Length: 358
Image (tube, rainbow, N blue to C red):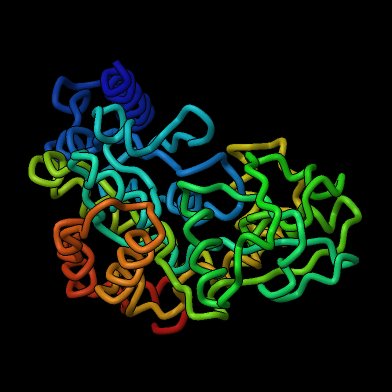
C-alpha cells in the first residue's frame, strides 16, 4: 500500500506539471518513466534493531537516515529500539528484523546456543563497559574494590569484564561484598553499593548532571579489551539478502564516518527527532564521549572486524564462564561485505562528503 501511495503521488505530480505547461495531459505523460518505475521497485523496506533505547550513542544510525544515505542505496530503513524484553538476537533470528546490533560476546553466546546469527560489520570498536564509583569513595583502581560493596551482573558482558579485571589485578574476590544488581543506577547514588558496572559513555554524564562526581575504572587500561557492538544478521538472510545487506552497510558505514565530522549539535538534533524526550545538552556530551571512546575514527578501518578482537573476546568469555566450550570464531563473522564496500571507493566517497577531497 505504501508503494501504491507513492506511485499515485508521482502520477499526480506529473499530471500537474503537464497541465501547467501544455493545457492537457497525454496518456504517455501521465505514466512514470522506466527509470522512475525502477527506482520505486528498488526501494526496499528493512527493519534494523538497536541494542538499547534511542539515545546519542546510536547517532550514526539516525544520521544515515537523515542524510539520505539509505535512500541513495534504494532502501527505506526502519530503526527499532532495543531494551528490556526486546532482544535483538531473538528478533533477528525469528525474522522480525533483518539486521540488528549486538556485542561481540553476545554473538559468541548465541552461536553456542545454536542460534545461526553472524556478524557482518563492526559498529563500535570498544565495549564501553567500566566500573563507576562516587568520587568521595576514593575508589580509583581495581585494588580499591577490596572491602567494598560492588554491584555485579554475572552471566553478562559486564560480569565477564568484572571477573577478568579482578583476575588480572590478582584480587581475592572473597574480600569483596558482591551484590547482584540490575540496571538501577540509583543504587550507587543512594550508597547501597559503592561500585556500579556502567557504560562509560553515558552513565557518568548522567551522574554528573544529577550532581554526583564519579571515578571510572576502565578495564581497557588493564589490557582487557573485548570488542564492542557489531551489525549482525541470520545466516539465511546473508545468503538470501546479501545485496540488500551490503547496501544497508554502505549507508551505515558512511554515516559512522560523516557523523564524526558534523557539528555535535546537528547530530544530536537528528537523534532527537526520533526521541524528543532526551535532554539536548546531556546528549551532546554523550555523543562527544561516544566519538572519543567507541567509534573508529580511521576511515579506512570503519566496519572492519579484527580477528584478534574476536579471539580475545572469545578467550575472555570462555575463561570467565560466559561460554561453556571453545567456539569456532571464524564462523561467527565475515568481513566480506565491508571489504567489498571499501574496495569500491568508500574512503574517497567519505572524503568528498566531508570536504576533505574535491
